[in-house]
Figure 1 (cartoon, helix red, strand yellow):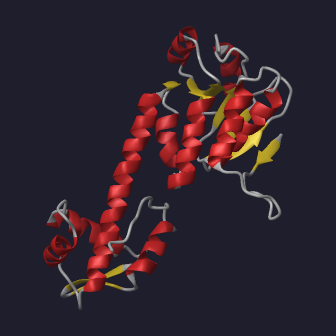
Figure 2: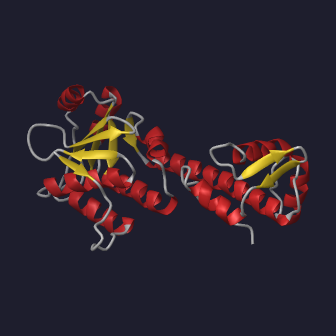
Figure 3: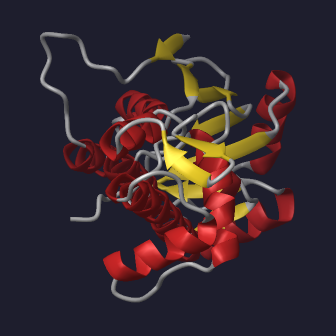
Length: 265
C-alpha cells in the first residue's frame, strides 16, 4: 500500500495537467501497463484533492480514497480501448471489505453492457479521458474535492453531461466570485460606509449592465463581513472595507479557492 501525494519534490519539475493527462490516457490503452495505470489513476485522484492510497498487487482493490469520501477505485487497462464488464460482484466484495461508500471503475472506455451493469449495481464508471478532463479543470480553477465528488460519485457512467454540469457550476462560482470582488472594488473607490442600495449605484457606474439587485448585494456583504473573513465591517452607516480590495481577494482565495475572481480595472 502506498500513500499517494502529488506534490513534487523540490528538485523535480512539476508536470502540467495536460502532460499528466496524456500519460494517463496512454497507459489506459496499454494492456501491459496495469501497474503504471493504477499509479497514474491514484495520482489523478490525489491531484483532485482526495486522500489516496495505491494498493499495489494482490487480490484487492487497486486504489482507495479515504477523505473527503470513502471509495474504492478499480483500474482496468484495455488494449482495445473498451471494458466489456466491470465484474460487479468482485468489486462489491472489495467495497464491503473496505467499508467504502462508493465503488468506481476507471478504464479507457466502456461497452454498453458495462454501463448497463453499472446502472444496475450502483457502480460509477469513469473513462481515463474524462478523468483527465477533471484534472485539467482542477489545475485551471482549483476545484475542491467536495465540489468534484458531488457530481463524480453519482452511480452510473460519468459522461459528458456530468462534465457539462461541472462546467456550469464552475461558471456559477466564477460569477459569484466576480461579484464579491466587484463589491470590494466599489467599497474601495468610495469614502466611508455604504448601504447595499448606495453600493448598487456605485456598481452601476462601474459595470456595463448585469448589476445585482439590492438583496443579492446585501447577502454578499453579509458574507464578506462574516467573522471568518472579516473583509468588510458593518457599522451604523453601512459597510466598509477593513483592508484593500487586493488583500481581500487574497484572503478569499484561502477559503475554498474562489475561482475566476477578477478585479475591475
